[in-house]
Length: 288
Image 1 (tube, helix red, strand yellow):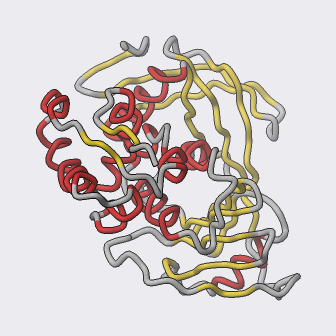
Image 2: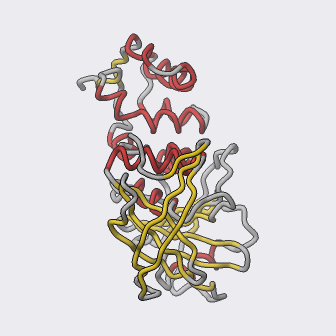
């Protein structure tokens, strides 16, 4: 797929008109796409026809969905709320799990319906209960001094994540799309869901490509027949990341058992390639 923008030395320069529902104006927006941001954009446009781009409007973030012709197709705005110090509106129960040591992102997993939360991956100086009290107010983006926190709902759950310095605003949309399909999990306690989420947050290219991550949860207890030969068509680096997980499956491990043993990098590669692994019948569920 070739994007129809001005391309030079790996940089795509685009400009388009888009309406901001908070500013109440149609504005010209210009952006240069390169590196991981460009790769994620191209991956998403090639798959679904449009992809999000973000623009900081001060007290809100504008998200514009753009097609390959660089025409704006839809726009949304998320207000940035200043965090408040407040007590929890309801009593919450803390769930503690053994954290993934290599995980770098600061995340709180909430089961909003059951009022349970897991802050084992939250290393910020901001108390988790303070964050949750702001999430109870509603909204998707909160600012705690110099830290921006995103809260995304899916079913009766919430994923709370501190925005990384190099994250573009549209990553909010990528994370939201990744969470679609996970409505049935218990976000506070489901370790496999924790591992999958931390894996995709570690790599924006995987986040943009994580089309079938929720299918992995559906297959979690299954054992798989593994056909290794088609794997030779994969790029060498991808093969090297996938093979240890596939070997565990060959030895009779369930999908969950194999993934919980793997590094975040290998989990991320497995998530990004799960659809093709199933479609090429490299992985076929065994009949129980």
